[in-house]
Image (cartoon, rainbow, N blue to C red):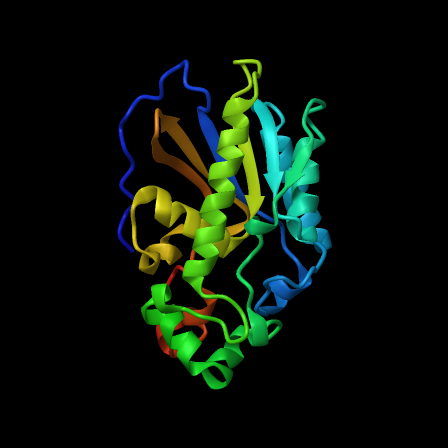
Amino acid sequence: MKPLRVTSRVVRPDAPLQRVLLVRHGETDWNREGRCLGWTDRPLTDEGHTQARTLAERLKVEPVLHVVSSPLARAHATAERIAAHHSHVTIETDPRLREIHHGALEGVFFHELPKHAPEQHHAWVHRPSALWMPEGERLSELQERAVAAFSDAVKRFDDDPHDPERHLLVVVAHNLTIGTILCDITGRSLDSLKDFRLDHCGFHELARNGDDWALIGSQGAAPFDPLEERDRPAAEAESDPSV
């Protein structure tokens, strides 16, 4: 994986929006079982609630002003945990922040994809920009709606005459949704999508200087890709300390 290039620009202290956190939701049962999970509305597991509480505790000292979330239960429940520590915050929802629509692959186990959807599996492993879901969405379509939702959330923040001490926007969404937004912001192809993978309740932090964005940090970046790791020879996997 190529390292991310982070800009060194200093964020102006008078910038309307100084920071954004792009947060992935907590764990669901389908995540734990290794199933394709898009628009199916699965709730958080007990572990998912623990992850959300832990993240919320960490963010309770942050200057959060707005929280925007995907309407899917796993994201909204995570957003509620975060907002609960900030009495002035209400949660806005935007359906454009949902995960990719898996269509006919919804609920399929990852390890079955090479057999049930060889074209999609090959695209994910070798060229994510070409990924399309039968009876669902293309990755490029997800990016179009996700970037529009992000841009609108930022504009609403800018238009709010808020306390300058509160300058953090939190966006709670999904793994591929967040990745497509970051590909756009950093000017990278969708083939770089997997560089931005997150564990549950991990996040990427952005800062803005004028109209320019910088990825300034990440917490909980996923260590491996389950769709690829499961296909590797056992001996190779056992020799890899990242597994």
